[in-house]
Image (cartoon, rainbow, N blue to C red; front, side, top):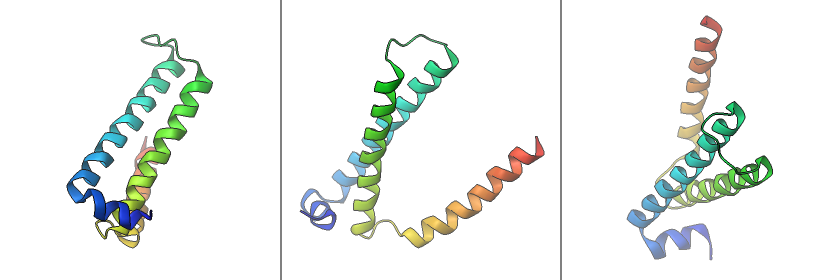
Length: 97
């Protein structure tokens, strides 16, 4: 089944909900890795497992984003233009520190 077909079958509300859930799972793994790297708020999870989970959740988020694009909710050209501006601002903030 293609991403466009998946979007049509499950519908936009469910697709947006799933995307939000996957983003939260990705954020959770990012936070856990940050805790591990700092040695704060101990987590027994080993880095190889956390790195695997990070990649797994990133793949889920990417699939959802691609499906949103296939359904016409997201436009990659708009995203690229916005991302370029945000990267410039991020870089400028870091340089000012």
